[in-house]
Amino acid sequence: MEVLNQASGFVQLPRHIAIIMDGNGRWAKKRFLPRTAGHRAGVASVRKAIEYCRAQGVKVLTLFAFSSENWRRPAQEVSVLMGLFLSTLEKETHKLHQNNVRLRVIGDRNAFAAELQQRIGDAEKLTAANIGLDLVIAANYGGRWDIAQAARRMAEEVVAGNLSPAAITEESLASYLHLADLPEPDLFIRTGGEQRISNFLLWQLAYTELYFTETLWPDFDETELETAIKDYAGRQRRFGYTGEQVETLFVNNGLG
Image 1 (spheres, rainbow, N blue to C red):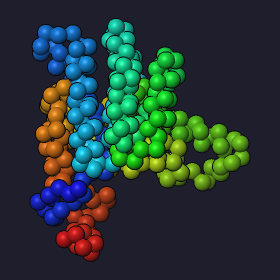
Image 2: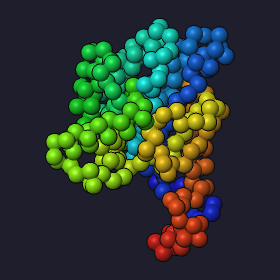
Image 3: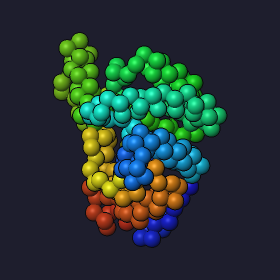
Image 4: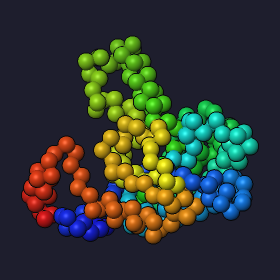
């Protein structure tokens, strides 16, 4: 699937879209509802994003559902979020499987209740062979934690004599990170008006195009997602090259 790039002709859709789903609480407050009502409303936007990406041919969709810092929120809200996570898995897993979506959850699961950990494992096992869309849910995840756990695992390999310190490079460290087997995000979207990454995929977002919108997550629909993708398509991704070099590469590859 291609989208129009006004500067250079046609370019591919982003292979990997990563989203911080922000604004549920403010959406609820505007309607004089409890914050938890916003989280429940946000589930519908998750469904829309998954279906749109699957239908359009996006390969990976990563959603930041619960950060390692979110435990600081009021206990009642955290409890509702955990319950919503569990109930959504129970309701949606078979539908994901039927639609050829592979689910994986990244983050430290040790803090989750045993029932939730079991449900996550079951959902991942059921959908493991699907190839239509990789749906990644980041839960109790932090980018710094991801890098730290990679460094710890590499250190263990060094102590065991299986890895030389001289062999530690950017590439080798990246292989120990979550999502090492998937393309890095091409497009990062944050809803709700905030303009920061908030400890999300810190390593993986190094060359990602960033897109921020005032739209609150429960109001973020297919039209909003298409607008973000069109904005992405109008950008020139240089990866350290000059604009002239990128244009030359574009022509030499028969795309101009």
